[in-house]
Length: 376
Image (cartoon, rainbow, N blue to C red):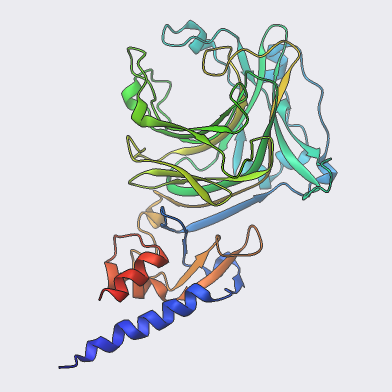
C-alpha cells in the first residue's frame, strides 16, 4: 500500500537538494533568524558579528615601545578607532600584569609581564600583492626589565557556544604565544577544577607548522600533563603560521572543534567548557616553560585582518534560539558566502523541515539531513 506521507520525504529532499547546490543570495543580518555553520561541528546560532580591520589606513600608526612598566600599563589607546564605539561596544583592552603568577608556587613564570594598550594598533600591510590595506597588530616585546604584551577581551561576557574565526598570522622571535580562546571568569581563583577554557595557541618557539589546541586545564595540581585535554597539530597543506590563514574554533555543548582554512584539524570532547564565557585574543610571554623566554630587544606579533563570530548567549531573550522557539524561518550561513563578513540565505523555513526530521534539540549538517531522508 502506498502511504500518503511517502510524498513528504520526496518534497523535502527536493527542497534540500536544491539548497545544497544553490548559489545562495546575500542578505543582511536583519533577514536571518539563525545561522547554520558547516563541518562536523555544524550548529545553529542566533547572532552574527563581523569585525573588519582591512581598510583602516586613516588610523595607521606604529607606536614606539614604552620602556617603563607602569607607564606602559597606563598608556592610552593608540588611535581614535579604538576609542570609538565601533571598538568599545565590542572589545576591552587589558592592562593587567602577572604579579600573582610570579608569586604563585603553581607557575614557573620568570618575567614580569604587563599588558599595554600601546601594543594594539593598525599597521599598513606591506606584503607583496597584499590582500588588505591594513591589519590589526597585537605586539609583545621583551624589554630590559619586563615583558610588554597585549590582550583584548569581548564586552559580551556570556557567550554560550559560538563559532569564531580570525584571518590572521603570527610572526616574530621565539618565546611568545599568540592566542584566541574562550574563558570563564573565575575571579582569580587558583582552583584548577574551576577552569573552563578552549584555546587556540601558537608558540613561536615551536616549529612554524605547529599549532596547539586545548580544553583547559591541561595539567593537574601535581604538575602532571592531561593528555586528553590537548592536541599539537600540523598545519595542513605545507603551510605555516607566518602565512595568512583562517583560524576557526567551534565551541559547542559536546566538544570544541578547530579548523584551518576550512580543514578540520582537531576536536576535543574531554572537559569541554560548559558555562558562559568571554572571548579573548592576546600576544604575550612570561619567561615560563610554556612560552619560553624572549631575548631582550625582540618582538612577536599576532596580526589580524578580520574576526567573525556567530554565537548564542544566556541573555533571557536568547536563552532559547529562534530555532528552539520554532521561529527560525530564515536559515543563513556565513560559510557558503563568497564575500567575507556577509551572510547568505540558505532556506526560508528550513528549520521546520529539519525539526520534522530530527526534533528540536539536535544539530544537523546538510549531509546528515539528506542521509536521514534517504533512509526514511
